[in-house]
Length: 129
Image (cartoon, rainbow, N blue to C red; front, side, top):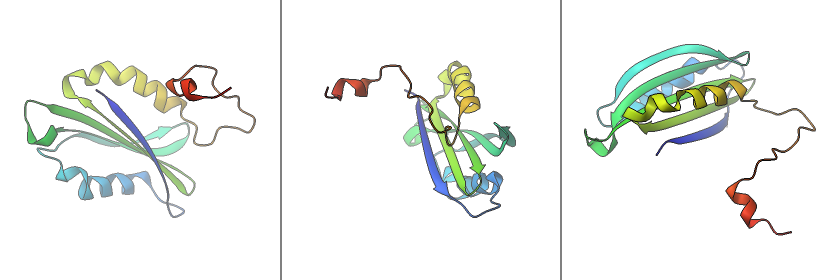
């Protein structure tokens, strides 16, 4: 039951991902039940500045349902992208490889003329031909 959300916002020129991370911790993440910070640091993704925060919390305050969350804040020019991942805490290590591949291959704006992926998705079932 892992989830990954991607959010794009406009930020002022010169914004640093660490500012976004610290604001998220202070305004939103600290409010989670039994929030415990695991790690936070600056990173680089495809040559762009980024920051990451890892933490745990108890889903709806239930200590028998611990959640692991990871948020990455990536700034590209005047755009910022937030990747929010969370899952059942004991399952977190099982998702690490897939997350790292996704983060390292992320392109905020694919090049012009890039081909659509040829893989089938559940949404293909709803296309009319």
